[in-house]
Image: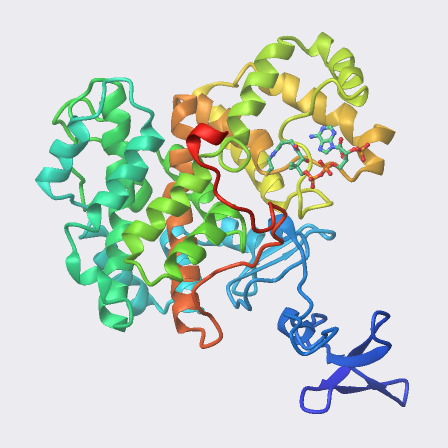
Length: 443
Ligand code: COA
């Protein structure tokens, strides 16, 4: 259908159709014609619907934004029914096969794949900003020996804003880009310091001669000053996982980034809030739940019994189902392949057999088919991370590192969007109407 945005008319089979919605307010008998653009009506167009002149006007009620677009975005496209995920139009499968995390990050931020010269420059800039101020190291050392690495990550990202006061100049494009580069460059170092901290190991400084993920692996694993060679299979697997987690349009953490960023605070403070959202078990913590579930099942022979209990409503099959994907999560397919590669190096995770059996049975069971429940990104990612030796508390940090570019691209898009203002939802007040204060002795 071709729509004329000025008149909101469209040609359909030769007939003139109006791209509008007519609403009749049965309280007043009045009819309103509201434009439809991009299969959406504007909530503010409902405000004109009033019973009388003093009336505030009609609002929409949409807890959890189940059917509300908060922005127009050019970054990430998802078709949940078809299981499609694309960054800037390019399918995730192609990026996972041919691209690197840093190249994908460039694409997400700038909208196009870099030329060789642009990539060289971009890579150089990122890899040469990986160091943290020494005081940040001292700050991180002050955490308890058993601090959750995600708590350390969030606090340290927030603390960075005090090191770069110019970051408040969010309307200056050059300053913005400088902070974006700093954040992408420094998050692996923060993550690695938090990892070394909980293990009681000395922090390792970055090696800018290595790749983004190679350097990260070195900061995690290196034990001596001899030359560290990252395992190429692990390095590539981590890079692929980073590509898959780089952005996912308006999810909880990204929405937090945009909401906080809309107050025009600096990006470090906004990103600390986004990372805090990711910390929650309903968002970045699901892969940990998958591992718990698999360990609880314990043996392949217990799988049919477990599935029966799930079907009776006695628990959920963790790592299955998604609010948006009603098909196989495209990221889960790629991760399954990546898992095979990693297990060749690390040895098979004993829980894999249980996971495969769960998937096999669930995918042919009427309960799961009817509800369109398929494996999501978390079903296999935890198995890979565990096989690579990461503790479960580190899983959300491994998610936050690559999501940094998504948060920053969405934050920048928000700032450059003339339609955006400070995010401030309405409410339906359900409390008391006006009443008088009662003195303490009269209560
Ligand atoms: N196992 C078993 N049943 C499930 C299920 C799961 N993982 N996920 C959803 N269902 C069932 C629900 O019980 C419900 O059944 P009903 O219609 O008989 O009541 C139906 O499927 C719809 O579920 P609903 O909770 O309304 O879907 P949602 O879109 O709100 O939830 C998730 C999406 C992701 C929260 C949900 O699928 C879930 O909890 N999955 C497990 C946790 C997980 O893997 N999270 C990571 C997401 S990336």
